[in-house]
Amino acid sequence: MSAAPRPAIEPGARRLRVVVERADQPACGIAVGDWFEIDGSRLRTPNGPFCPYAIAAVIPVLPLRQVDLPADDWLIRKPYICCPDARENVVMRIVAEPDR
Image 1 (tube, rainbow, N blue to C red):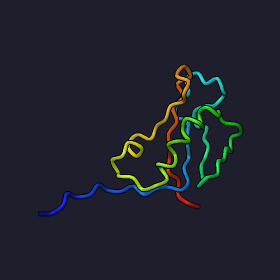
Image 2 (image 1 turned 135 degrees about the horizontal axis):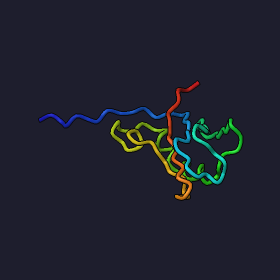
Image 3 (image 1 turned 90 degrees about the vertical axis):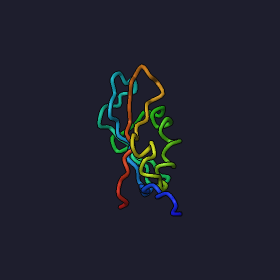
């Protein structure tokens, strides 16, 4: 009897970019297209300040994306995180970036 096939694995990414996909009423001044980057344990915000509450919402999930995941994992299929303030309706997407 053969074992069931294992799901495809999506490789982890050391470098991740978090991009604002939607921002209906952001109080902190971020806009669609703004982003920050995580490279290992370093945080980079090239567009200037980024809302600390939005960063705090994403940080707990980022280590999960830095390890290998099944291709059908929710973080691969729908890599979206919302800002904790629902009135602002800010949605961010986690994008795996190639290592430099």
